[in-house]
Image 1: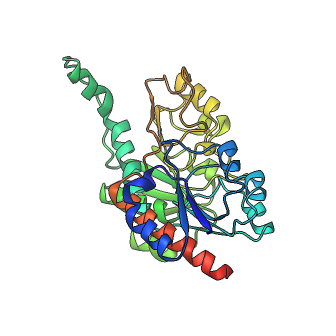
Image 2 (image 1 turned 60 degrees about the vertical axis):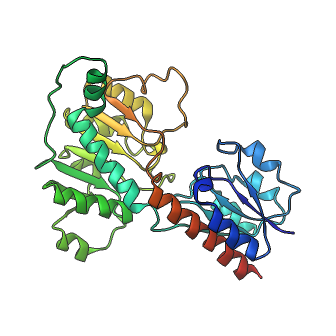
Length: 314
């Protein structure tokens, strides 16, 4: 009997209905019960398991993995970003791929806003201080009136923009591929075409774009040098967008004030990582889409997607 491999760890929370959907269509289900993201080696171990479809999280579906799953016909991304999937290899092998669009926009957006407040008011450190029975206050800043530059005007970037306008912030979107004049006018949002120029005006920069060869290390030493020393960087998109060594230098040298990320180049980071240990660097464990609502939506949509893809193959 053909099998569906389900790799995302958080899928377990809402697996009952999706598994019913899969078994009703005649598929066996293989779950990831390790509590960890699969490695390439672990994925290769399924070579003889008659895997017809994969519902995948951030596990590496490399060309090597795809070539060694001879019966694989479809991949459904549990989420949106598909940079962990070798899409060219999938296409050449005739493997259909889809993602769970519009399932985690709100959750990621709300985390980005939360991290802005964290950076502005130093909430974590002040709360910890009180828990340690101290009473030292750290002066913060208001978000009202600050210039937020959103890099990436897709679904998540737009949700962030709408909420930032509700906080009375000045908002500009930089996205050379964005074509939505109606949205910009409706919410009175600016649009920039020159990244190097707009980055100099930003009080806060929030990244909402995919990791591609073109966007890798978009935030680099040259860009950090152009930013305000009071600027805040928020990254809830992909770790590869930021040159972490350059960010470390920028934070240490005061080229920018603080950075908060939900993503990292290596997750989890290595023990003793210099950037993680900085007081003006905040890292959360990739929780952007990890809400009750988003997890449930992603589980259902990614399951329906795999069934649709497999049905197209028949």
